[in-house]
Amino acid sequence: MSEEIELIGYCGLYCGDCIRYRSKASDLARELLCELHATEFDKYAAIKSNSLDQLDAVKKFDHYGECCRVLEAIVALQCSSPCRIGGGCAPPPCDVLACCGEKGFDGCWQCDEFEKCGKFESFRAIYGDSPRQNLRTIKKFGLDKWVGHRHKCYIWQ
Image 1 (cartoon, helix red, strand yellow):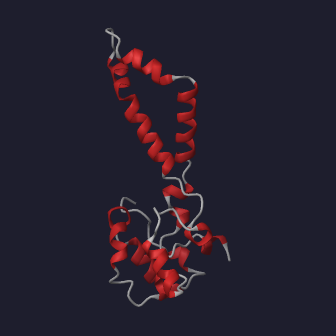
Image 2: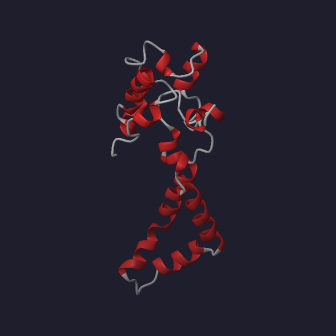
Image 3: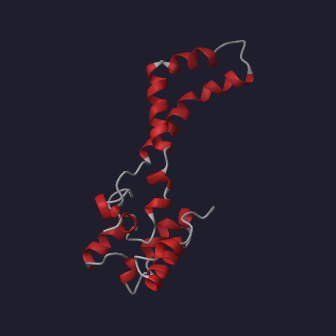
């Protein structure tokens, strides 16, 4: 199986386009958190934010804890194993993956019901109709050729 095919999600999304899979953001956020912890930056931020002579930039240290929680959330987003290889990055269980497994499908493109399937509704906020558009493209061009015709992954693209 080629790498391109391994990166095709059962839902029609292409892992090679996904922020969670291809981005360095999670690794960088982890590195930053480690560095902040190693230097005890939380103590520095607490002292600076309580200083009477605060500059506007230093006042922002009041939000240090919130910043760390956002960095932790970015770390948690990381996906190192697409669904075809290791089960996917969606919080278990992935309804699409489970459904394809139950039906013995290689992907939703083999299902006659994907156009009306409610399992795609949870994707809509981030991916819009990209999964379904990709499934239609896979049906039209086949797995080997669809990648060059795929739809953009995210609604902001």
